[in-house]
Image (cartoon, rainbow, N blue to C red; front, side):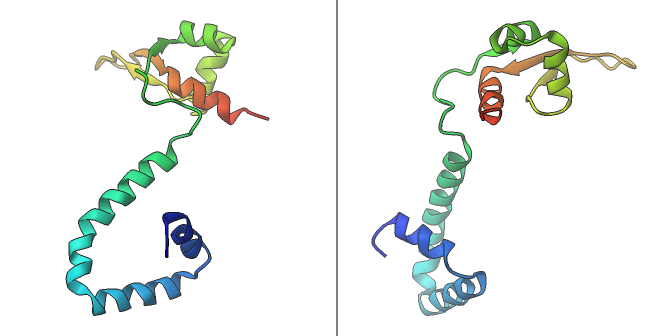
Length: 125
């Protein structure tokens, strides 16, 4: 295989049983090389997993601003009740901070700007 694209295509188009047979063969024939390469591949797979799961449209390099519900309403042009409903339905990722250990106490809701952008991307037609 020449590059990662060909490798991913091969993995995608090969059954799990066939892949396991090949992995077992490679491990049995080249056990020392396989052990030496495990750390490298673990790092590569962690890197790929992290960057493939993050939506490409959201820039994670910028500092992620934390907004109040009022600021989210202004940013998304939505009503306060609608934003709170979206957070309760887990359609918009929110955080409750400042809760105390009293019965029925509620904290203050906060939302990351990137969560708003991800929500907007999920609404795309």
